[in-house]
Amino acid sequence: MFDVDFDVIILKMLSYIIPKPIHMLILEASQHRLGKKINNFDDFFEALYEKDLTISEMMSIPENDDWKYSTGYARVCSSFVMDVYHKSGMF
Image 1 (spheres, rainbow, N blue to C red):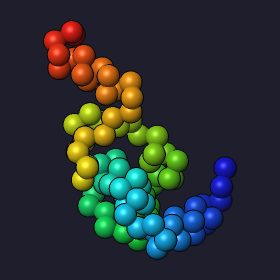
Image 2 (cartoon, helix red, strand yellow):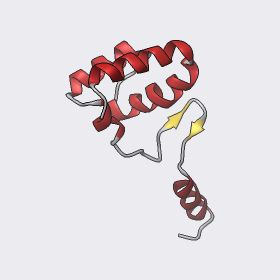
Image 3 (cartoon, one colour):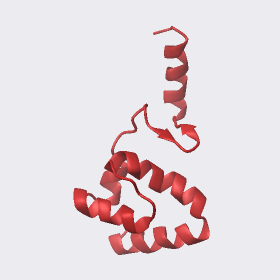
């Protein structure tokens, strides 16, 4: 497990190197899990502090199928298949 300070440094550095992927992968998912608009890592860490969560605890909050991202709805493979089955009337 990484030290919290190390996580902060790595995430902030990545946000300068590859801002769009980091925003999509970390910040958009965090908005749903934390219930707050998050524009940057300062907002992200402030929200974690307010909720008294670590990064690992926040990322372990299960994905809700109704959450919509800038690219649309996100599904892992098994959830996507089950969603297709459900919408086709199999369940």
